[in-house]
Image (cartoon, rainbow, N blue to C red; front, side, top):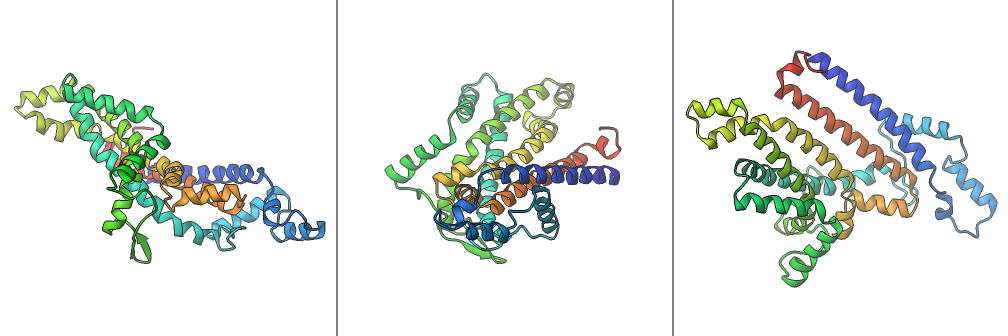
Length: 324
């Protein structure tokens, strides 16, 4: 088990090193932030002084070496636009995005898995066909369009829920959370619902496919022969056997939700990382862009590492080193 963990940690470190280089080179090949930071009427001497102050006159490999050294010390640089440490800026926005992503993925999993298991258990029932139809819509309809419809219907027409912003927050250990207040929870519902629809459809289809396959297996036949009810079989056997692919999708979708919540955060004016990176792209705030992408890559790697460790707990063969 220890060898398996060390191997995965080493792989994660190598992936992060490669991703940091790709992100740094890719971002620093886009535009010139000096054109945004200073007036076009500035003299060449002022431009040269500004370029030197931000270290943009040094070779790219030297800039990357300095960035990597600071990164290992937990220093992500300073924002060119806001003039504050990038780490402070990101940490001030990260709780909002985490809150939204966790709410969306949990809702999709807790609702999608039972619906998918029912659709796989009773594939020919009218309710199962309705569930699968809804899952097709979840895959097909664009997120931005669904968000606008949700705002139009629930906020404008019915007036039940707010159309945007985060609402009231409560600080816990210095971090503000909106789901702990009634007003904040009302603000969270629509963006979380909008962000969870694609994940919900995926969970439904994944759980349905796994359930249909396992219901035809010898495990279920023996369980039925032993006199177990279908409800017990679904809970004890089917859910356990489909848990590994569900864990995989949960981890990957949580990472993708953090990375691609930009559209939802923009539509609902949610003050998270997505809105921050859009503003940074428009102003060519390179340190924020690089830090955001490196953070997202780190979260993906960390989530995949966690998924691998959960695999080892679910599958004893991995702990014994029998599965590559």
